[in-house]
Length: 348
Image (cartoon, rainbow, N blue to C red):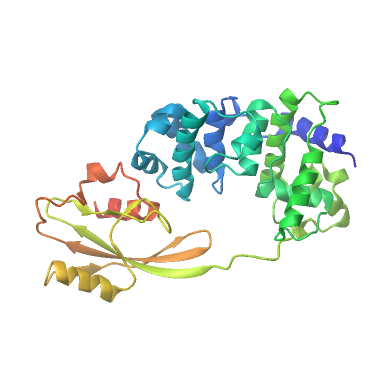
């Protein structure tokens, strides 16, 4: 197994069998590539294909994104989840404008200093847009590399992760053998494509893989043993009661969530830890008001199951000066968590 043969095999395979028609592949504009990379973090390609063109239509360049209110960015992101990505996206655009004159830096090292851009994302932007010889190490690529190399060190240990980064750098195309202008984008995309299509977590299609003959894990017959990570985050469960208050004009009461935690910075109905707390709050504001307890439903987050209990309160009138009540035309353009948006649409 040689470094050059692995890179060459990936580059050749990607050209004929990889994904080559995604909208963000038809450009070397770092703004568009950066946007796609942030959207694709922990989100499937099929989902991003719907959001990506709508986002570009609203914010076609880094200047327009930087100048937008954060609420407008969160509204357009609504339903994609992991909303800290959207907040960092906005902060990053502002930093590019303020610190770099509206031009993205051309090296992974500089890109990684911007908000929301980690080492792997920086590597992807730099490789795709500027053909820099730097690796990426997202979940798919990490799986491919650990199997090819039979790298069985525990990646929960920081020094082992650093070692894998060094090995990933060594495997990048050699400029003495391949033209990096074309090879780096293809190699980077190819490693992603292998992890997404063939080198799957379970039942990998080893016989179809261009690295099959060189893959140590495939030869040993144990590819599913990689990567090795002993420390895993445990799932937790939490219940929230949502007070969906609606007035006689059909307006919904919404408030902005705190800047940290679940649904940070988004708008939602008031949240309570239990039904008793919700009912006490309602009776203190609208004595004697009847409530409609609806069936609870589950919203699955990365490491938490969120059980949501909607409670409908139909209010005859509110204070004329109240500014936390929104019409349908208003809340449809606000940054709402996906389950809240579905709930409000259902209520009409």
